[in-house]
Each structure stands twice: as structure tokens, then as C-alpha cells.
Length: 259
Image (cartoon, rainbow, N blue to C red; front, side):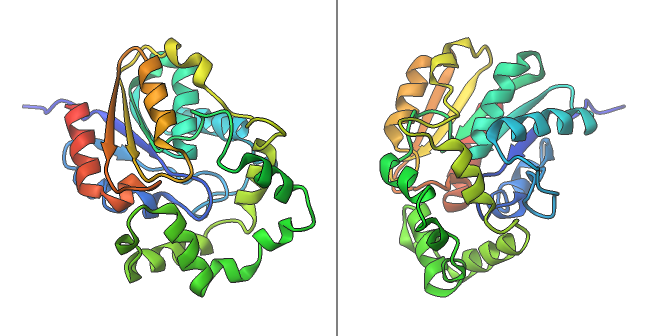
């Protein structure tokens, strides 16, 4: 007797020092028990060649080509941060190919980034060179950067720091800042899907930490009210990295949603 084919889940990681093996390290083994799980590395991450123009729209075009090349006709898309914006953009562009949508600490839900005016100034001033200083990619600078992303300082252990170092070695230097320069405009960000959320026709799960410093919880709450078939799961004490900070809770919420 032939078993029925497994449903496909595509996991999309975030920007910066990230790749599939970092953010989804603890999710893939558990999710693979019941689903066909695909984890592409975005351009410039994990050894995938960088795009000439690292914009969110260019990443989305790349994702469309990747889905075709991987033979994925229909799937659940789960994205973290930038990956969430890509999953969201894909669902709006090709709704017939998306079963369900999972947005984890998703980018694309707010018109501005935190400290928007300051970020815009730094990206366009001579001080922008400080943002790419090697000291920020090692030692105390690396620990401080990771600590800013997570909500619970206890999550910043030796394993996580070593995994981030591995991700850094496979990420094109300065890529995150080049992408951010394309995104941050004077009064807004380039990628904002808030006005189109009501167009989503598939079930949507939002997973968000209440200590997220990069995408405040209020934006996910507002998005959940706009999306027709939305469920919001709030992880208390969690920051911007739910699948890595709280993998058990993340997977439980994801499996319940998929089931």
C-alpha cells in the first residue's frame, strides 16, 4: 500500500548573519517527522551566490525562481524576519501556490524600523563604516549583537555563538547593511505589506515574542486583526528569534497550525 505524499513546508531564514542551519537548526529534525521540509539559503547566505542588487523585491524574485526549480507546486511557507516578508510577498503574488502561511517575527508589517531616523542617518553618513567594523563580528561585539536580538540573555550560550560564527563565515560581508540601505527611506521602509493583508486568502499563523526589539509585538497584533484567517501566538520573554530561542514552543504552535 502506497503512503500519501507528505505536505511540503518551506522554511525561510532571516537577514544578516543567518542561514537555514542556524535559525531552523532545532525545528527541522522535529518537523521532518511528518512533513517534507525544504530550507533554502537566501542569496549571499550559507554559500548561495549573492544577488547583484540585494533588495527585498530581488529576493522575492529569486524565491519564485527557486520554488519553480525545486518543483514546489504548492506548500506552506514559514518565514522568519526578512524570510517572513518574503513568504508574505510570495503568498500575495502567487496565492494559488500557498496552503498556509507562518510569519515569525516577520518584517514587512510596519512602516518604519525602530529608531528609524537614526538608522537612516547612520546608513548615509561616514559613520556607516562603523556598522561594518570587524569588532562587531567577534568577541564582545558579537555577543552584544546576539543579545540585542534575543529576549532572554540565558539564550546566548556557547552553542548559539558558535553557530552564529559559522553563519558569518558563509554570509557575504556587509550584505545586511547593503540590503538595509535599500530598505530604509526618509520616513518609511521600502517593504510594507500592511495595506494588503486583507487580500490574504490562506490561514496565517503569526508567532511573535513580546520582547522583540526589531519588530515590536504591536505590529504583529495589528496585522493579526487585518488578516482574515489569522491566529497570533505570543511567546512571553522571547525576542526576535522564536525558532531558535523557543524551539519547543515554536514547533508545538507550528504543528498545531499545520495539523
